[in-house]
Each structure stands twice: as C-alpha cells, then as structure tokens.
Image (cartoon, rainbow, N blue to C red; front, side, top):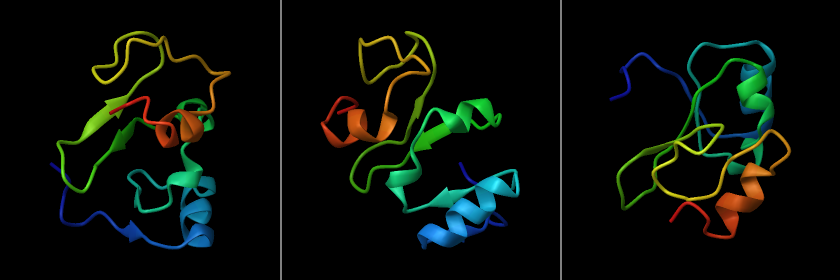
Amino acid sequence: MMSADVDQYYGWVDTVRAINSKVDYICTTQMGVLTTKLFELGYRVFVHPYDDEPYEIKLGNENTRTDREIRMEHNLFNLWKSGEFF
C-alpha cells in the first residue's frame, strides 16, 4: 500500500524531472517512462492496473505476470504495451 504522502506525477515532464532528481517514491500515469533504466537508478517498479491487483516488474525470472526472464536489454514499455504482463 502506498503512503498518503507520496506525490503523484501526471505529466511527462514532471515525471522525468522526479526520476532525474532521484525522488524516493514516484507514482505516475506516464507508462512511457517504464524502462530498465529505473532499475539502474535503484527504483523498484510496480504497475497498478485500473481494474486489477498491483504487481512488481523485476529483473530476472521472478515475475508473477510473465514467464519471460526480464533483462536490462528489454524494452519494458513495449513488453507492457504488448500484454506481456497480463
């Protein structure tokens, strides 16, 4: 569960600015920032679908929503967009 004091970012510029500023917790509607760079920056990545339970995307093969081994070379946004995690 997310803390009530976590800022939400709805715009692209604000979200990227928060990532570049290394804000501890980022909640955003901007799925285009879904990249493996977030792992390099020390972030954990969670997706909160509108009508389903939240899930985490992790490097490796410990993901509950896919059998694919997630590697740094993957484009997480394209995987998400294609339905890989549904």
